[in-house]
Amino acid sequence: GFPPVGRTDFGTAVELLKRGHGYVGFSSGLGHVAAHCCGTPVFMLWPEHEQPLSRSWVDPDLLETGAYVPSAWLAPQDVWRLAKPWLKRVAEGRYACSTR
Image (cartoon, helix red, strand yellow):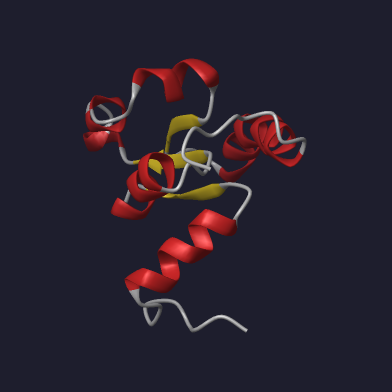
């Protein structure tokens, strides 16, 4: 299996991101690496105080195509409502990633 959380080295994390169909996570550098370096679609949760940052760094094409979706930290059922259609599109391979 995979190493426990917090024990995965960066190189392994990058390889996992390259091979994954999509990345769902909290605001972190891994979302940036996944979106820009690995071409992996990203759904990332951001706290309220970081909302301006959630879009400031991302390639506008990723926002436009839906390959990167920033979301506020919401109740689980609200996150699911937003993430479910995105996950379906990821599973169908509907995001063309330029780095793959």
